Image (tube, rainbow, N blue to C red; front, side, top):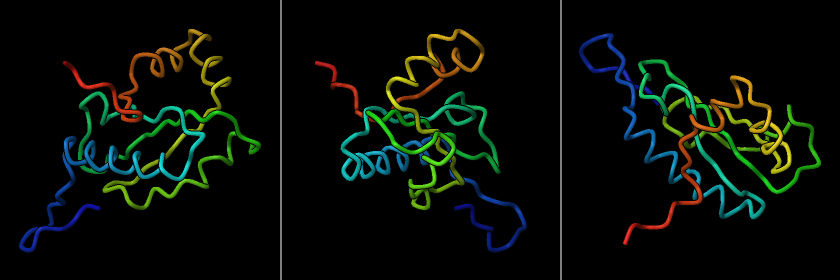
Length: 125
């Protein structure tokens, strides 16, 4: 979380690399307890590089299936281990495919603007 400097009122906010590393560690831990997790990434200001003091982390997860309504799914994800405030959208695989196929602005952001952090891509040879 942000911390105040000892001698000023200026907030120090975690930079993109710090947030990315923490998100990757958090994603690996989440995947270990959620076998239905297919993909996890983030979008928004941290993905585009436009983050600043006060920016939150916008996460997106794709799970195999869920019996919960869309609006309730994110509540079961513990986001407190991340270094900045975070929100998560949790889609089933079928819902994800439908979102991407729509072609509207949100679909374009989800198609091209998500920085996928789990599963990790294969290492280059």
